[in-house]
Amino acid sequence: YCYREYGGSSMTANVVLMTLAGALVNGPYALITTAVSADLGTHESLKGNARALATVTAIIDGTGSIGAAVGPMLTGWISAHTDDWNNVFFMLYAADLVAGLLLMKLVMKEIRAM
Image (tube, rainbow, N blue to C red; front, side, top):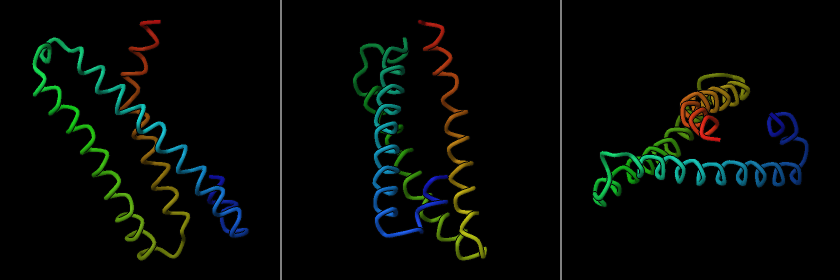
C-alpha cells in the first residue's frame, strides 16, 4: 500500500520503498520455507528418509520459484490489459491473502503448541 501511494513521488522514495519491500518479502519467505520444511521433517512418514525430506524441501522451494516467475508475468499481463496499475497491487494483495490463508493451519498449530 505504501509503495502504491508514495513510490511515484520521487526517485528516493521509490528506491527506499522498493528496498524495504524486498527486505520484508525475502525475510518471511526464508522463514516460511524453513518452518514448513522443518514441520514436514518431523512428520512420521519422512522419519529416517533423507531423500524424501530433500524432495519435500525441493518442492517447497520450487513452489516459491514458480510464484517468483508467475508474479511478474501476471504483472505484465494485468498492466498491459488494464489502464490502471492499481489492479496490479490488488493482484498482490490477493496473493498475500491466499498465502496467509494457506499458512493459517501451521500458525494455529504453533499457537496451540505454546
